[in-house]
Amino acid sequence: MRLGDFKLSKLEFNKKIEMENVEKDLAEIDYQKINTKEIAKRTKPYEDMTHYKTVKEFFLKSVKEHADRPCILEKPSHKEAYVTKTYKEFGEDVLALGTALIKKLDLKNKRVIIIGETQYGWYMSYMAMLCGVGIAVPTDKELPLNELENIAKRSRASAIIYSPSKAEAINKIKESIPEIQYFIEMKSDKALEGKDVGLLNLVEEGKKIIAAGDDSFEKIKVDPEAFKILFFTSGTTSNSKGVMLNNRNLAENINAVSAYVKIYNTDRFFSILPLHHCYESTIGFLVPMAFGSSIAVCEGLKYIVPNLQEAKPSLLLSVPLLAESLYKKINEKIVKSKKDKLVAAMIAITNGLKAMGIDVKRKVFKDIHENLGGNLRIIVSAAAPIDKKVGVWLEDIGINFLQGYGLTETAPIAALTPDYKPKLGSAGKPIIQATVKIDNPNENGEGEILIKTPTLMMGYYEDEKETRKVIDKKGFFHSGDVGYLDEDGFIFITGRSKNVIVTQNGKNIYPEEIEALLGRVPEIKDVIIYGKSPEKGSKKEDKELIITAKVVVNKEKVKELHGDISAEEIYDIIWKQIKEVNKQLTSYKAVKSLEIKEGEFEKTTTMKIKRNAENLK
Image (cartoon, helix red, strand yellow):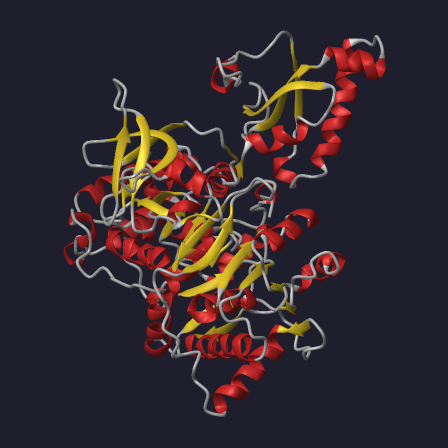
């Protein structure tokens, strides 16, 4: 998914926004009958927060209590309407799939990769794994084949559940991963033949087993502390870390959300982000599942607006680039329709009314809301910093803007904006179960953010050394992020002490992995990878960091291999080598720029490059 492709070309303001219409709307409001929202008065977490221990606990509860309510909405094709699966149907399918995976394929306690775009089969597969099959390994569908092979081997997976779009890729690597016992294709009803079988076939087989009286899968008791999910961080698989999570980690996310945000069974979440991200699979899937809400699957970035208008969601999870694009495109339409001064005036009026406890924003800005489906009440942004003005504007037009903070290692929530006390510009408030402190704060109160939380991972997969590096003896996770806590306990992030480069899409790029590959190039003596900001004067919408290689040339090796050549020729040779390395990387990690450094990098006494010093240069 490339968020740069996001367009709102179909967003139009069909209804005229005229001053007399707005004044008429305001005049028709009976202010005496409007109750000030309790949400504005609240100063503490919700008392009815949940206390779940496992995913299966709230899954079975929701399936029973919300049986006839919509659960998953998906479009068979762009021209067809959304098709709804109820909680009863989803529950039956999950239990049937789990039964078949254990009874037919003997995958109890085995590791299973799930790879593909967001769809009903992905949801089914992930829930079946969490409810008692084995260990789920959600995997990025954009991975090169060599990385997918490595994940299969490193995770010791016994099966791969994949979407039809990945069928060709899976066929190419079957022979190189003989350890995989089964290849299970979503949307397929193919009967078991060798190692291949269709997911729909397994569901039907599972239903037959249950109908015959076997309800053993439903009765499996899930240990909250047992290793159940393996997320690999971004990176070449040989160097990426595997984050081990259990049911308690995920359940505590639901408990955390329930303390800070009111979610209702009438809410509908809009799924845009890929499910292999812990953010989307936990907050975009398990949270609505816990509250009996529904999930509408977006077809793709170019269909966001028509899908919003058809599905009419009330909650949208985003990354900064998406929220910023939404803000920018809507405002461009407002300016084009010459209503920007009117909208600004109405924002001032409605902000004044809201300060007195009268919130009429959704009525006044109904044209904007209707273009987004009409029901959107919350937008959540996470994964990277976002411009504060975006949040301010969304709040101004009547959409609650919340921010979340965390990492895959915290499954993912460590902090979240309470809906009853938003603080724009912050990364949220530590979740109610967590303790956050600032390590060695400077004169401004800034230091590394340390987190102690029940959502914290079990550790890195088969890597106790790295685990001990980030989790201290007191149980605090060293996030690598630099920030401070304000007087109300909200987190403000001011920088990163780790070297990770975070793109606007929320992707993490670890410089060391790319440097390791470039270190094999004989003409390169030393290299650092960093994200360079676009030059002033470049297109305003192009805010993405440019992945840049700063290189010290191995002049002796260049002379040995190529003789006496010019600086331009050296540049061309190294750039050609970089392009070869890029072929081994996922597209968003590819090096886009090369800088040749004269002289040596600054180094420590142990000959490590002083990365921060070089980046400042």
